[in-house]
Image (cartoon, rainbow, N blue to C red):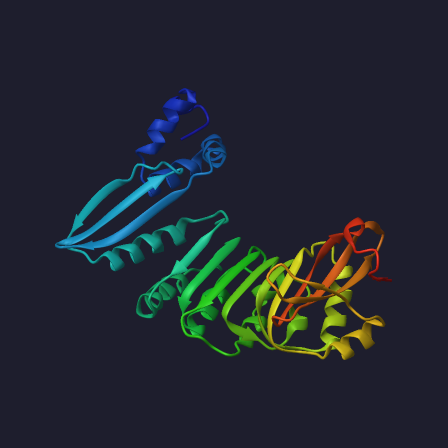
Length: 304
């Protein structure tokens, strides 16, 4: 197809209808030879949702595109739904060029092994901006994350199948260094300083020392991308140690859920309207965040 093709002279709504009936490989062939069609498809931000399920004599696939609520159903005889999905995934991985905005993996362990093998056959890393990984064993979710392009991955959410005490190996992955958003559930990490580059963090930590809090405070004050950090800790430094390292006692108040808040406030560099707040509360949570300077209690000290 050239840019002089009669197809490209059709009204956009007609081209849309034609492309709607093309399968994936046909679209790949068309876009390979026409820049205008590539632009048309990008502007449509195509989204495909597909659901595979086993049926009595084969499998069924329900799918819809671009957020349309009406599912289309396709029944295929004589093949297992999982094998069909792996074949389709392999084709997609072979021809996929752009960056996937969101990928969610929620699979039983035996199924996840087969899916991982498909992903591992890809010549290059898979480009994904956001990935949610649920119910996988630690070895599987670590392998999955390691197959993603570290420069593209920004948001990560992990919920492990089995409750584990510590999985520090996640912080050794190259992908960890580039995260902006991270949520870790059902396991802990033991090195809180290694979250200092993350803009939004929620997770479980084994312990936090006063020196750790001072390190994170400095990192967050000097970070242009920091938004918030919430850590559920097994062990937190004594309040006297934290007060000594910051030079002032905390401002104490009653929280909305009945707990006691111990708050410190730090002046932001080159910003008089906002402060960095640190809350070490009685529920073993440590929270860093931003607060408007005007909302800081008048009898609290702003450090810096």
